[in-house]
Length: 639
Image (cartoon, rainbow, N blue to C red; front, side, top):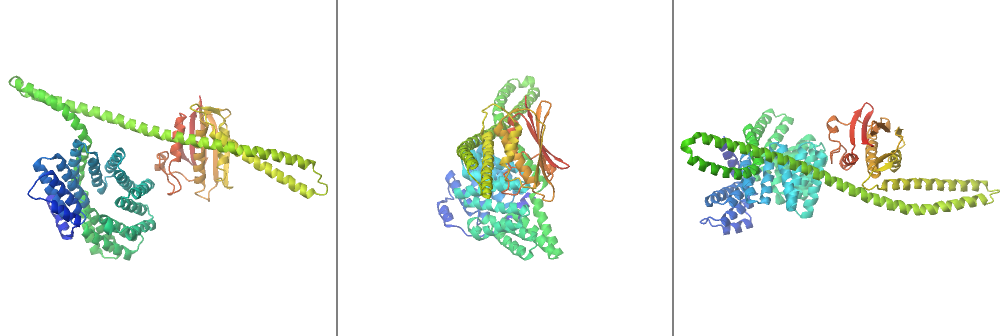
């Protein structure tokens, strides 16, 4: 069955692959010597395979296979790995996932032995693709994340961009659309800065696909038409033409624009005839099935659906998924087994020598004991390695948390210094204004206003307005000074109600007249807290509450703030009359970058910062739905 499938693929490739070759390909051919087998000649064949992969995939595969055969003949681990990597990439592009995975896994193992990190990352990227194309997103994400880690450790911008694009593609297919857009914008900006047109095109195309799969078809089509009109994909990246036209066909089908859907379906077929991809052929036949169904051609629709199912089943066969799962286990254990093998080989050698001396006395008994020993050592070593990996993962998470905490701490310190300076600079002119108003008031009282009662009343009103404005400015300065006050590494005995009131003053411009703020203060003591951190927590929660109550104008807009003691803990509650939070989102509220707001309205960091700052107090923060809306509760120890 496997041979028949490969033969079918090669036949299609032969029918559709064009024969044009570039001038650079001719210069490579001029250096090719078919009578000589060497590393340089193998390298030339692989360069030729890569050069013709865009125009003649069959010829590229032939060159790569010849390079592999010659590399195995001269026993070169390096060139055998390079050839398998090239073959794996070609199979990956064609959609022959099983062969791609096997060649790429073997290439990765060899590059680990050769300690070639860049090639390891290249192999991982294509291994991730094999999982991605059959919908195995979790293992794909692991591989793509490793590619990003390689890029950061090697300071390789190309690998970083590739990892961002690939991770975003996984997020886009697992309903993490906001996170996908954030990563794609970063990848797009880096690609432009670095001058990588191929990665820029991929990032922009993936943005369009995220819009498409989130129901924003008009925005998706704007992106797709930009790619079609301004990026010249046929010249700069022809491999993505079939993907682009298939996505545009899907968008027009969903918009019920049958004529445009048929037009781009035809363009997708032309692109596939130039650069065949089984995964894109599958999407092409699925779209034909939908077009025929909409045009009421049941016979054609059935034929195209059968073709779609055949391709889909070949890509998602149970045997391939089982084999891929075994390869995944092999991949995870490979580096560990290499170390175990070196330890056990020494023991095997010693035990074999003993067995030879005592074979007549012990026979099969010694062999059985030897095998049991090896199994025991392998199991014990595997458990130790697994435990070490668990500890390393925990240390990695702790390091990330510490880094985030340090960044937030430095940010709050900078803001505190800035606000202290602003408050000080504003306070000085306020003192002058206060003195001047006092003198004016005294002069007003001494002035003879006989016959000028109206002017006296206007002057009194003006002086009162000036005093009111000055008192409001003094209140703002006081609030700034409270926020900027730093207690160092120690908590400060603080009036929590004063912090809440000053925070509400900061947010006064956002609190419209139809929003009712209800204060239920039951706390009757000062508490030890970090004032500037509690100010940030309260501001973020109230800001979210204001946004929530404004989402449904028809409902009463009520925000209730309460404080009380419960046992030895301070309980600070913020309830709002906004809509309920979806149950599946409650567990993710405090995750970094998680947000249900539209793009551009929120970063998804506010509540995660609150979680960190409350944790620094040794407290807890949580949220739940109530019959009236939603309530956030902060619990802090005060002892």
